[in-house]
Image (cartoon, rainbow, N blue to C red; front, side, top):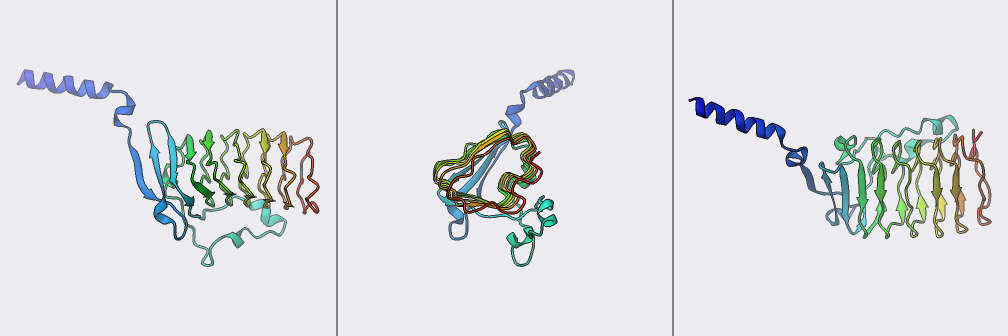
Length: 237
């Protein structure tokens, strides 16, 4: 009996000293493609590294969270225009893991980054985006407060409403040549943003784009931009 008890205690001790990765899990197998493309895009999460990986081809689905763009309403812009008709929230399938996501990889072949893809992922430190990406959806990186730098791929043409809203760690942004439209509030409340490079192809610079970017000191507006919308540089002190 004593030998059995001793063996049990020894096994218990060994299990208790095993490194964390031996009990880490990976959640995968879920689809997250856009309408008509549902099964062509999948996601997986590796808890050992904190990495969310989205793989496949074509567009991602769009989701609808509580959008922390309260300043938009103050200036007469209706954020709810970007919600479904029934105004019901639809959360990303990895929403419950958002505090655990440290790194993200959007594999080549993915063409759109869905609305609210990383919304509220406050611990996200870095992301690698697909070279085939053309659209960064509304609030895709909203409130990713630990995300210092994002390399926007050369093929991106549109950056959605509040796409990088409240990315307080970002210090510089380069919007690549070929980009056409930056929707309202896209970089608002990026309080550490010091410099941004805009492409000569840009046609739309919307309202509140850089509102509350307090450290932004200079910017060159491309010739193709017909005008500056309301409050684009509001409180850029």
